[in-house]
Image (cartoon, rainbow, N blue to C red; front, side):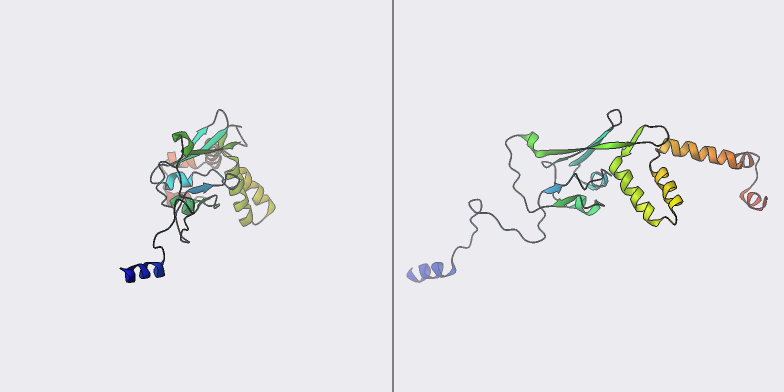
Length: 191
């Protein structure tokens, strides 16, 4: 018996003192997703990637807002939201203690404003997302004129883009040639 006690004192405690002392976690631990609204462009990539539908986005065009929300009660801590975010606005933290007094405390929200279409003035996409895409495209533009044209294209709603495309096709006369029954080969050889 004395030999056993001696061995126990030599090896020390085999268990952790959690919850009385903080629990240390490993480097790649997947804990609670932390969302930084200042870095988020509200692109909804995380909502598409979330298998548990813990992340939701609701767009209110009348108010001109998009609301991002996460329900930690549904989250399975898979990390797909972190992988899909283009701006690294959502990261998995080391925090795993999610005990709350009310179920409503498990939900976090962020509200983003929508950009207005350059043509019709209707709200159509998050302003931060439009700005992000415009900045990316302007980096690949060959001239300042092309950068301005790309910025205008990005800040136009899909309905106005379709209307502009239809107008351009009508101006080119392709519709009449297609209706007349000319084949693609004939169109290429026609001067």
